[in-house]
Length: 318
Image 1 (spheres, helix red, strand yellow):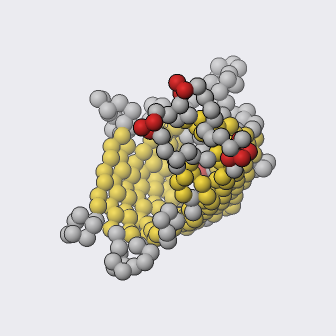
Image 2 (image 1 turned 90 degrees about the horizontal axis):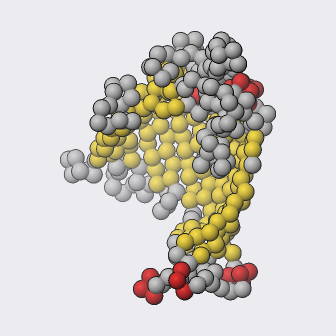
Image 3 (image 1 turned 120 degrees about the vertical axis):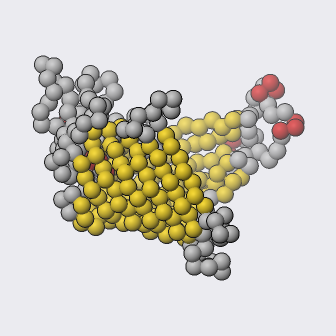
């Protein structure tokens, strides 16, 4: 509560080994948030946030499909930069933001040396010499500046522990032509989700499902019974211009097509995903089943060096 204006600061450190952290792997993030920048009477509760960050993570773009038999040296992405953003609140859950991001991105191998290209081990034991480029520059290191805008319309609500209602989101990144190779690009993602209530009559009017008394909620925990629900979800995106390979859309993973590892289906400049999920309360838990798929719409070949083909990933999966 700096100067009694509600200003807050948050700092965090992360390392793969907190007992013996190395300078190369130590990540940090510092956030300073200034609320009500346009006054306490601002209906949008506009807030200004400054963030400085550094991180090292395995790139899912330059990895092999599990079980393929390919030996692929890992490519890590070192990111260090800063972001200044203005956010607005429109309702209880709906919000939007616009920010400027400046970052230095380096692709490095497991020893910390710059890795300008991804590679894999050939049948001869040698490394493939002409793998996909990891950065826009030939050095394995980029400097990038872009604007990021986001808009979320969230009208969901909680019904006895079950989420119901609609949620829509859009995120757009616009490269400003500053930095390595003067990259000008546009990367946009749209998603829509509908949580639909299923009438109890479809289940014989009995929800949760009747199970032995041993599994039934204790009387002290009894409360309103949550409804069964059907979740419909779709997401898509497209990118144009000089988009760095490490910013390509990655398909597969818990936030894409579940049942696959992150990036297992490929890297793309355009993609589409769809999912249908059924959630049914059972005693104290929820049983669910889903069908979910993703496709790169044939755009994997448009990513520099075609990492989808190089690492023998399918480009689509369900």
